[in-house]
Length: 42
Image 1 (cartoon, rainbow, N blue to C red):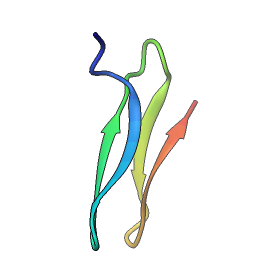
Image 2 (image 1 turned 180 degrees about the vertical axis):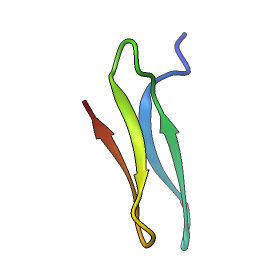
Image 3 (image 1 turned 60 degrees about the vertical axis):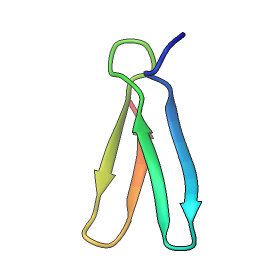
Image 4 (image 1 turned 90 degrees about the vertical axis):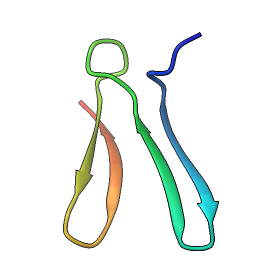
């Protein structure tokens, strides 16, 4: 079982859970621009 999957899950009306994944297999990372957080892939 891998816990390094890039995932975005809405957990409440104003809450979201982000699992960033990993840099080795999925090449994913998170970006916060001051207003919004998002997952990106290289």
